[in-house]
Amino acid sequence: MSDPLDPDRIDANAPEPESATAEAEAEPATPTGGPATSDPAASGPAPSAPAASAPPLPPYAMASGPAAGYPGAAAGYPGGAPIAGPPMGAPLVQPYPGAPPTAAYGAGHMPPPMPGAVPPPGGRPKALAIIALVLAVIGLVMAFIPFVTWFSGFVLLAGFVVALIALIKKTQGANGLSIAALVISVVGWIVSVVMSIASFAILADATTDEMIPGPGIGVSEPPVDDDEASDPAGDAQDLVVVESAFGRTSYDPTIWWYVLIIENPNTDYVFDFAAIDVEALSADGTILDTSSSYPTILSGTTAISGIFTDVGQGEIVELDGRGPDAAEAIPSPFDETGSFLIDGVTAASDDFSTTVTGTVSGTFESDQEFVSVVVVARAPDGRILGAESAYVDRLPSDGTKVQFEAMFFDVLPADTTFEAFASL
Image 1 (tube, rainbow, N blue to C red):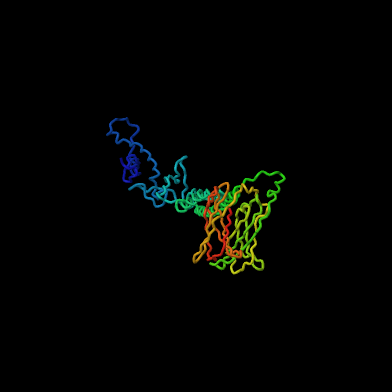
Image 2 (tube, helix red, strand yellow; image 1 turned 60 degrees about the vertical axis):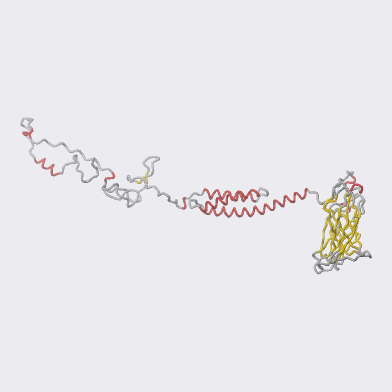
């Protein structure tokens, strides 16, 4: 079958040239008056059949020109006439609903995008950047809420990671939103750390309020009448400082030792977790340093000792002891409270120090822990030479004796006497 677009093909149905038609018209016509005959030779050549009309050329066989769709395109097929197309900038049309857009004048479909082509920046998706920003904002809000802030780190981490992915991948857009998500995530972590510390502080404060302060003994308060409710201490008396002493330590002249001997005149009252503040005063009344302790003071005599470390070049001339008043006393019958017994106090010295040992026992309802023993050294004239402390981890309630040991970092005279005072 021949190609209809081949220019060398001769169509049998094509009209004859004008010259052939003219020759046919010049031949003499057959006389109309003679008889009809069937002899072909006599009648001459038969008239030619009328020529068929030529079909219209298809659109792709029109005059040569650039192919539609894009400039510089090649012809439709080898040996054929170039495919005609619309001029540059021809509008796109859609032949029917759902069909791909085509160029006007039958130019064909638009060329598809090349594989691997990256869309322009304005058309890149922004979903990851938006998700990262939303996660970062939610995490930041959670970070400002106490206790909830502990869980905000997971949300902030997720927002940070998604923002990094959106920022690194070239197929993702909205770099500004990704950077904003990164910044908000970092700020959220800082806020979360601060709020976590505050949350722990709140928990610690609430726990402290619920605890019973001090290592004091457990004493059940007896029921009181309404008249006695306004005065819980009843007829209790204030504590009395019987004696005090102080001095520089031999190993550091800027550090001073001190001791207070306190008397609780109340037989049936104790001071549980008593706050005792000892102030070191100079000659002009300046407070050079303060030392605090919180013992449980039972009925009888108790000794409190310690050191001053911030006196510097100052000179201590007096001690001022401050403690609880009678209103803070707790009723506790003497025969039910219990007491201490010190026994076997001896001292031994070497070339550098003097060590004092002894035993302590107690008659209490239950075992006592961290019992303090203060050893006071006295000269023959009764003057206090120094004081040191020792501790007993556990004191059994059945009267079992427990040994203690206190060391003085001086070689004390052989005629020095020692006293020991135990407290809870």
